[in-house]
Image (cartoon, rainbow over all chains, first blue to last red):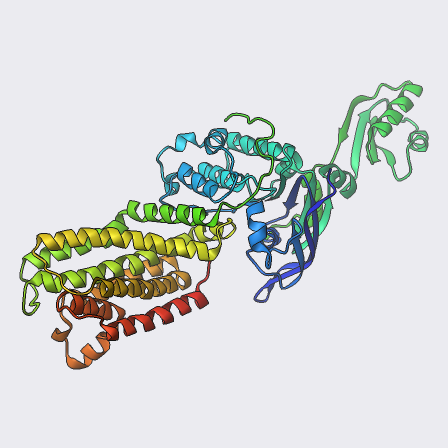
Length: 307
Length: 258
């Protein structure tokens, strides 16, 4: 299912004056949902905008649905949907008017009324774009990206500035797109958005991909996880360690408090509890602390604030 | 917010046929133009008001004959200026600023299709202006002469010249600067372009320069035909053609979409 690359970026470089925005970036996005995650200024938007055909790469190759966005734009554009980070609508246009217009530019658009209802844009009525709330403007931009029934949708910060309900509606829509076979590339700096939606996450920092994989792979690979339990003090952690796989540690940092660090999977949990059973120990307050994508992200991109 | 039947989003991409895209775009652009209050002030109210005011009250000495025979051609030129130059420059400047051009650039509508639609929207607006102003002028006792083909030629070349200059401004300056500059130019050309004040009221040296302005060529050419019954005013058409080629070429070269 997830074999066909929808986006293939190789050794991409893009400079603005003396500033290098994208610095030898490699990225393969396959069918499904790919999140491009990174701090502000990491090069996310530049990369996505090159894929959309807005900018010419200084070097490197970019293929989107097998096409070169610079030279094959006319063939590519009908097949993609784009949600910009902001704007994109006539300030004097009503939401339904703009959506109907974008639909009219496509051969087989979605039912506009259905989409308006689905995204809760019906209440916009005769209000013109400039007077819509920020959330309504974002939802309209999302609707404009999908109304042409594209194969691939680019969403630049789809969740930014949305209240929880609107965010939920946006996430549900992305899930439905995926279920219906539409591929999605979304940029975000919200870990939960990536964790919830993405089959694949590419973490970008300083113009390069510093990690890529499924959210689970990233959480597993990037950092170690911890299992804690309490029991009677002075248990023989040496014998526990023998039962555990290599590169796992087991210590008793405080009397009666035990900590196992390593790759915590169901097998390891079973090993620990059966060791406890053999030793007649009731592992109280047993807990598993898995690293979140946020931990991985901060580990990869550093904790200091960016300009 | 409701759910959607599975399969709703199943990809079925494709561009609409080009004529349909261009028609839809032209219709939307025209609606945006006619809905905007400031634009209407500029394209409808000011020309109509000037025509009524100066046509019925003797404020400026317009030379021999009925004032309206002098004024109507000038006001028609002003209508072209207001729509093709000022209105288009301001609207396009803000479309650029608010990412409308950027968003449309990734739609199936090609750039030349967008520009064609913009031109059509300008032409539709001009037709509406010409109808309205003609009706007012006739009510004021206007008696036009001349060759209608020459009039259409002048209006078309004038539109091309002002569109090029307007798009050049919109595509290179910031939206606020375009707003200010386009209005200022409108005002200066209104006064100094032979629209309501005859060019021969200015000193000779100024006349020579002002006569080369596109607005002076357009209002002068229209006046030669409609007031004096000239056949084809080649000189004025030539001036407009030079402005059109230079303006459109510069706009094509320097227009920045973001």
